[in-house]
Image 1 (cartoon, rainbow, N blue to C red):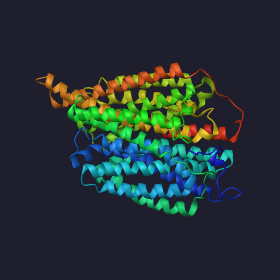
Image 2: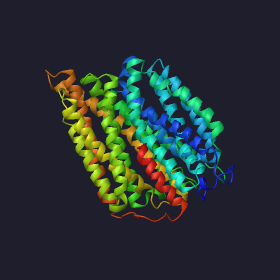
Image 3: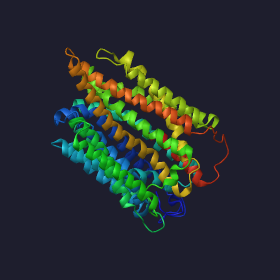
Amino acid sequence: MSTTEVVPELRGTGMAAGPDPRRWLALGVIAIAQLMVVLDASIVNIALPSAQKALHISDANRQWVITAYALAFGGLLLLGGRIADFVGRKRAFVIGLVGFGLASAVGGIAQNQGELFGARALQGVFAALMAPAALSLITVTFTESRERAKAFAVYGGISGGGAALGLILGGVLTEYASWRWTLLVNTPIALITAAAAVVLVRESRAYGTPSYDIPGVLTSTLGLVALVYGFTKANESGWAAGSTIALLIAAAVLLVAFVVIENRTAQPLLPTRVFTERNRAGAFLVALLIGLALFGMFLFLVYFLQGTLHYSAVKSGLAFLPFSAGIVVAASIASGQLPRVGPRPLMVGGMAAAALGMAWFTQIKVDSGYLVHVLPAEIVMSLGMGFAFVALSSTALIGVADRDAGVASALVNTMQQVGGSLGTALLNTIAASATAHYLSSHVSGSQPAATVHGYTVAFTWGLGALILAAVVSYVLVAKQRMPLDGPASDEGEETVFEQAEVLAGSL
């Protein structure tokens, strides 16, 4: 995240010589902020069908509730980390909290789809400022390695368990209050947490002259937005429509320009050297493919549970709990096996299991039941994801240079968010097209059957992404094993391992 050659987390300004006496209280503040970000994603998924109906959002545009947030968050995460390094991590953290809370309020009172989409994008912008600042604040607040490991364990536990809590809370708020409260609930929590952070969190920042790759930010973000919007227009007007083609061409031009800029600028937003190591490149690509498949699976499974099986919001939230539990269980097992077997078997096996679970989803019919068709697929897929997450996070961070540690750690989340935003838009278009084709080719076909057919076609494309992820893991990730014991060679390497565990939990 820093543009300097030193590790900013280890050389902040404004820090006292000894440990911060309020460090555990500060951890509580940081953990609450992280919980809010994690809750927001899962809460909105459960509330989406109700929000779509209330604001008359079309099937083509419903994906923007998810992709607006994911694009802004993923596209600006690296820039947010750099801003936090140089303007002050505490300051960035507080600004991110306040902005996130206000954006949530705007979304909660939105009167039309444009206001909701805009609010979700603003949430993503401020989350991109808050999230990297929070992770860095833990590193600079806890300077002793054992305490830092405990702090990261708390942070990772919040990240892993928060998603499950969000599913339940989202269902309760949607069913017994309103879908609007799934957003409004963030506002008081964010503002109170920001006030506590002002008092309890210690400021730190990096040395060096601030340098921000604004051309890189603009070309990458606008390129991704054009690509997602192109997928949406394909749903509305067809792939051969002039507007669709123009948007896809614009996306290609902007993204190529981003690559050129990153190769020529002195302080790039995304140093291309981070991708030159084979294992790390494989991990980033797998994270992208996982995001594509996972976000799409959640979108269509929510609609299947609520629209086809007629589950209430609470019941559909509870129906996802085995998925969260499976990831936590598998990740715990994988963390113990990783030093012994290395990342390759865990990534390949995990992706193969996830693909098997997705293949199970492709067999869903209108009359399919939860216990026979949904639950087994959830369990198999979540166990595979849990094994793969730990391995890919560690692979992405091991051996990275100190100056690139922040970028590499943020990239795992960035690639998943970008993959999720692109996958949600693309799969939503594919599902809608498949539904329309089913209705036109089956004279006696019913709307529910056509809708579920669209879901299964989207699941099939997600299956293809997971199979490709397994192949990439096998081809690009080496067979190396990780050290069984012994201390890290230096503090920077130890932090990399700890951040890998945190990112595995947050994924």
